[in-house]
Length: 479
Image (cartoon, rainbow, N blue to C red):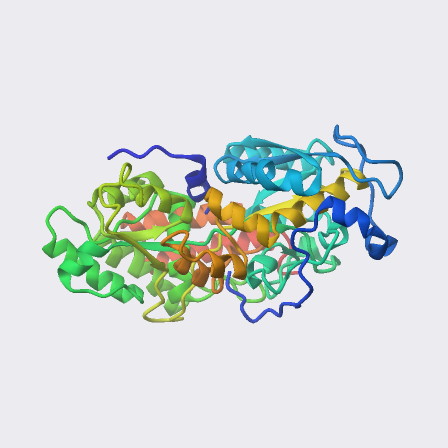
């Protein structure tokens, strides 16, 4: 069964964080603060909220309700990604515009084009768009050019309902992450707001598991043992399928397993840690054990091949993102739709022995280079979009939530919501550095080489350490 690559799945193809110990301030919820209600009570907010805010170099094309620092723009422009951005656009049209009275124009771009657009706008201090969509691996690069969020919200951030990891991943510098030289001197502030609660899940064929008498996989050892039996006992089925294409695909496929068995990729001083015995065992397990029970040709497999294998039943199990779930569970698209079950990413059976699904959130940020009237309007729009009422609507539209109460009130909306809710609370983000896009690709190239049998696991991790630490040293990470 051929699968066409959609932009929602392209997020996984192109790239795609567990800090449960990070404290979350409990504040009064600012849910569903409409523009009308906000203006009526604006005196309570006061000028102090906006003190120290820097204006931009233009209005970006929208009107405003008046002049001076109290103006609120009537129009906003948003640059968003195809796929997930379409749901955001509908949320604007069906809830937020009425709630705020602000006309929100959402323009959609393919993944790679959006990165180029965002980079161009923010690096040149352009005011062409007021709110930018950023995939979370981009955020360390772009965070210095988006405004601290809280000063523009008309109410409090509902931190008591936001899952802690989605607050942390939109904070810069990132809490409990190694220090980044480019962020030296920056005060740690929330500079964005997650709008898509993506985290990697695990998909497996329940019928195949039943056929061999296996329970849902809890560890990577369970995955291998069940996969080996399926390969041996189920005609026409491989026990696993690796997404091993050179570069980002291989890295995205390996990262959660690497964290589960090998522990964190870096220590607090940005030293690569997967040369350890646990890290090397993680590479060995992925490139040797899982390779044994995967189909031929996995060194060239991207997400479309993985989805094809799961959907037509030729593969029994693999990691999968929420964007894939709707396809795999659609009987018109997937022959095995009634047999696919989603569970959290398995724990390591050796080494670190932890569960670490990869976090993959889309983050909204307010462009620092637009004028204050636009920033005030953007704050209202973001506050409305993340309210309990808006998020209920978002789930109805097919959106991926990130609030505790949204999950609790809509757990039956998707069969994979329970797994996603658990996963978001112990997820692991990709390394929080602007350099990840560079060394992540290189690491994926080496993983692909190990998968092809051209490097031993220990040779692969040693080469990775040399390459990555050379990149970081040249960027001043070890001064």
